[in-house]
Image (cartoon, rainbow, N blue to C red; front, side):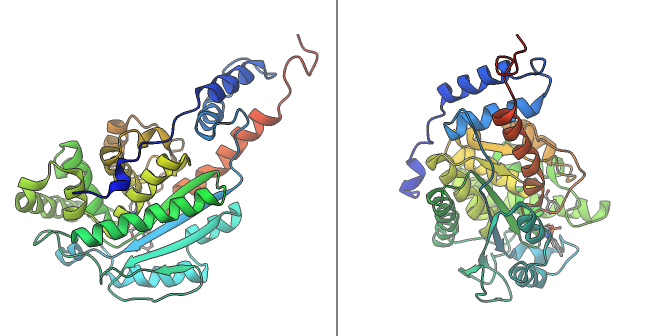
Length: 347
Ligand SMILES: Cc1cc2ncn([C@H]3O[C@H](COP(=O)(O)O)[C@@H](O)[C@H]3O)c2cc1C
Ligand SMILES: O=C(O)c1cccnc1
């Protein structure tokens, strides 16, 4: 049994718009290929937006928050109470993603799916509080099926609202102390890797802390082993509410035809989940940056994803994806506004 909306196919890719954009790039007053990836970004967006003149002015950022019961295993440097405190900080406009959203003139929505302290609703915060965080997945499944479906639906609805508002790019961010452990566990289970391959310091664990994190995940794998063939069960047993929200949002973006810029380690783990639940989703995803979290490279490779930037970032919240938006906007401006050889009389 799985939610019926997962069966909706991804929107078609517009190869006519892609062809027209590729042709236009060859006519602009520059040696062919000289703008490198700035050319391919514009062509890719033309294919996704179904327009030979793509744009990235209207950006929506949805940040999903949730706490993790696995934090009880001592896998983060920070206490769980930081998640709710950060939700208040998002609402007050003081987080990194708040600043980036303002700079980009992007809309920012915070969706709190369940934290140990409930910060309640505030302007700009959608308070869904499915539970006071997930259960400790070394002892039991992180979520019930109902919680999983509600978290995924929250993501789906966010993407659908953004689509109706004619958003050109969707960014999904996350906040949840302990979520690099959940993300590494999900990605390892879905990609058939060992926990040790994908774990890293997260907020700043030392090497001993990182080995402990891998042991915690391996212990969870032993408990859940018979159920890890099904991606929905992987997400339910090892996931976080915010990772389920991201996966639901990415799938709905692909289904409605809204391009996504995927952030770092946690968002990329959600992207692997989304792709396994609704194959074809990955065609709708651009990857913003190489996270400093060491396991990110292997997950990107498995998805065939080449991140645009490498700035040593390891924050989350959607911050890396937001940092890539100015570059994407420049790619579109060059594509749309440069003169052709014919227009410039340069035959
Ligand atoms: C103040 C603060 C702000 C953050 N914003 C994002 N994260 C990031 O760090 C957390 C994951 O790391 P770990 O698995 O080690 O707990 C997530 O909340 C992620 O979004 C933050 C972490 C902190 C402490
Ligand atoms: O790349 C990320 O998304 C990330 C890495 C470490 C901690 N939080 C987020």
